[in-house]
Image 1 (cartoon, rainbow, N blue to C red):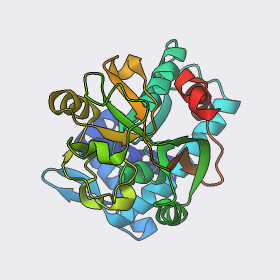
Image 2: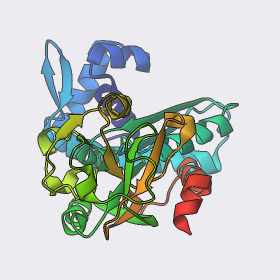
Image 3: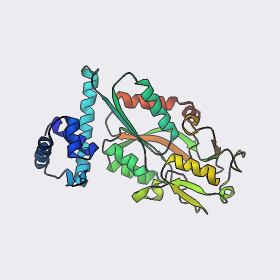
Image 4: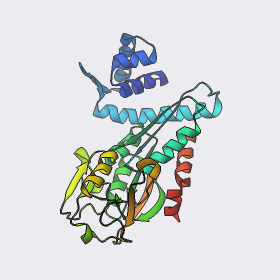
Length: 305
């Protein structure tokens, strides 16, 4: 097994096509296919499913690539520290639940590196996918939250995926709604006051468990509920239907505009915001910079006091 073979496998997994991967690697498709065939024979598993529609990772392949990306990330760290990296493209990824502050910190990171060649990615996605992205090496950092309800299930999953949880800050629960909402002028809002209005939440797909909900109090019996898949749709529904969602209360106007506010929820709830990363592996320079920028956001600093 060679680093070159692992790079080949990583590129195929990212492109989903032998032909596209071969183009990106500047080799012929037969040579690439043969290199992967030799690798699969050596490790004793089928890494990829092949079909007329492209290639996808097998279940065993997902696990293999998790280890492979861990090795490749370590090689990148060595190159960053001990070689001339002026011509090396920087790679960095963040996966997160739908938090505008995570996007704002990512934006600050990109701006700080605008003189370098890089390939960055941010994925606002479902809770399970945040965890799996870090496990498989698609992202270095996964931003999400824990509370008393989901902690044991999430920590068990972190352990199974060999991930480490890092605390950022604690905060109470907030009602997130648009400024024209009938309850927007209140200092605090009780759950019973929200009964006439639709409660919005992010759809979690196949892993649609209460434990993976992005919103607190996910087991509460809401009279009206609407699920959405992205933050822009959620904001449109807030304004169009006087709907609301429950969140950590960090509002970044630069990301969502100034038409939305967070009002404290009159319930005894605590959200612990943090991130997951590979256990035993220090953050890269880019990862450390991203976390520093996130902690320095005024909105985050206010919640961290």
